[in-house]
Image (cartoon, rainbow, N blue to C red; front, side, top):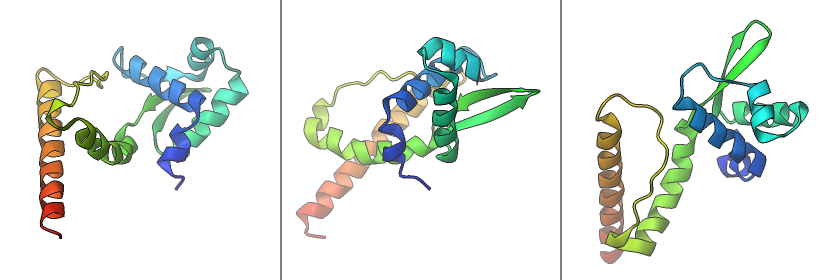
Length: 138
């Protein structure tokens, strides 16, 4: 599998991911290649090439409907990036870490808020344990 950092290093692929994330809040039917080409102003062959890389990295899913393909974001593999970044943010800001308002995939009712609270608590606990282990020389 390709290193996730190599995949997201490309600006066009990041633009595609951001577009798919934005569109995911509007509905779950996916976004067609034609819509991506139109929205980003990039050629169809270029978009197709980048979508292939994103598919291979499992960052997008595809749904076929006749000759058309509809793409949706699959954010799971981005957890590796999140896991890598969190210690830097916590170390840099400590308790003063800024609130980051990221667009979330649609979740029912209060689930988005609960997920954010749990995520922050988990990151804080992980940092506390890591810091304690460093202090004790483990």
